[in-house]
Image 1 (tube, one colour):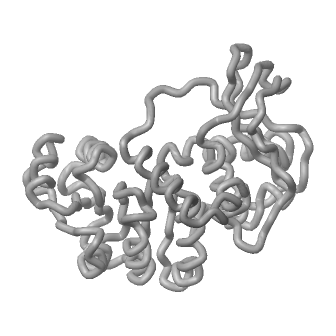
Image 2 (cartoon, rainbow, N blue to C red; image 1 turned 120 degrees about the vertical axis):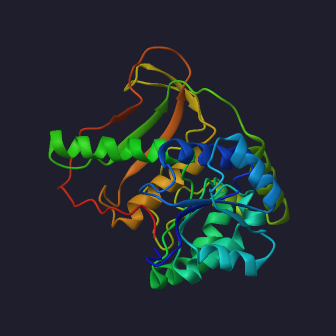
Length: 299
């Protein structure tokens, strides 16, 4: 993180649907002159000003013009922030230069990405450089995959308190979900499918739960592709559309923290397809010695 930055946060993509929601949240929670300083960024100054007014942000809210196709503008923007929160996707089309700029500058980076193929590419290209510069690069910090990662963390911390150590098996079970796919999510899916068509070898990466843990492969994981009765939740379960992304992120978090949940950790996600349970996360009762829990999810 850049200690000398002008802003704590720059919301990049603030004129888009999701970026506007992020900016609206900051308007509600971080008033001008408050604890956190922030700015809105995007390609068009006029559109940024329009969104600023529509969401009720003060006229003094800083606006930063930056085009994802202009590496010089990206480098200038990231040097002004401690953290870049970007909603500009598909990330495999518009995010690579931004990640590179953040890594070079030592600026933290947060996105909403669910594009595992691109994430793996960025990890291979920048992981060591990010360690050296101090930049923390965090992918998937929205519905991909925060609720599920926090669910695993909660389950494991509960196991430590009540059982004396972490458990090697955690299940993610989704009871209900409101909302649908945004245009950006659909565009990201289309970009990923196009990438697989151009490079069929990416399909193996997409189905590999350890695709984001370079040099480490854990035990065989449940596929989550079949409908079955889950005795732990007392209901039928079936495939969950986000599982292929979330499981990778859960295993990467375990990996980066030094495997506090064990190198034999097993995790899957499925949707509950019939009523019968009030439990969304369950864990087995097999224990191992307790281990410390580092604080950073990704480096």
